[in-house]
Length: 114
Length: 114
Image (cartoon, rainbow over all chains, first blue to last red; front, side, top):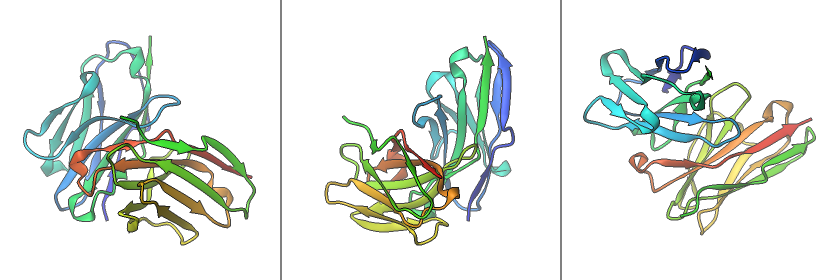
């Protein structure tokens, strides 16, 4: 069975700082990879996804993620955060052989100080 | 295009009771998945319904059951509630079994068991 690890549970940074959130998964087969964001009191929203092709994926709100197959990683980055990026971020994996079930990491709570 | 609607938004139940949560899928989506998100954790897959049949189940006991109706809406039923069932229950809809089409999440039902 697949599993997903997000190494940082909490991140605090100032506006304009760069953000990188780590995500590693364990599954030997072909995967689809996702990053979701959950703003306070709101539903999960898709930031970006990787299915195939260019391993550097660009998403909404200036986020990007890089799939490194050899490291089983899919780290999320943003060069310059804003106060409005305060939210919880979830990495998720779909093993293509397992239908379209998503396996989520435990989440990283990001607080951006103005 | 309507999103995923879940009801109720909040409810409180007593240990041992039964509860039914409801989900209306996004227009055009025929697959519904249910997730449990305990406080401070990532969502955990409960089960998925496709064409009114269960199509995959996570590590949850049989007292968690579900239904999907011809209009693709869905119910999650939990019998013999336990304190640990307190969580946010998320419904996600998608088109068929193709994760490339994306998932749309509802805002969830916050269940508190006392």
